[in-house]
Amino acid sequence: MGRSRAPLPLAVALVALAAMEGCAPPPERVCRKMIDMQGGWFANDHERAEGLKYCVQVKTEQKRQNPARYKCEADCVLDERDLVAASECNARCK
Image (cartoon, rainbow, N blue to C red; front, side, top):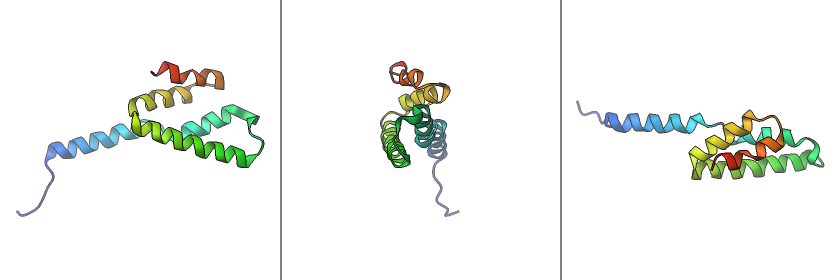
């Protein structure tokens, strides 16, 4: 009787928000695909790891600032097979 429960609309909104966040591919997956498409551009594994780390930071911030645009770009990158086509995803998702 004295239980405290969140109102149903609030609970539904929180579940919907969590579901929307989960729909976009994670930055790590997008960046790994981009790094893989770059092939031998990195001199060594350390440079490759640093490039991946930086990419994840940038994509995480993009996802936070504009989730819809991030999702569009991320889905586009993951659908492409080469770096030239993937580099056009930014312009396609404006």
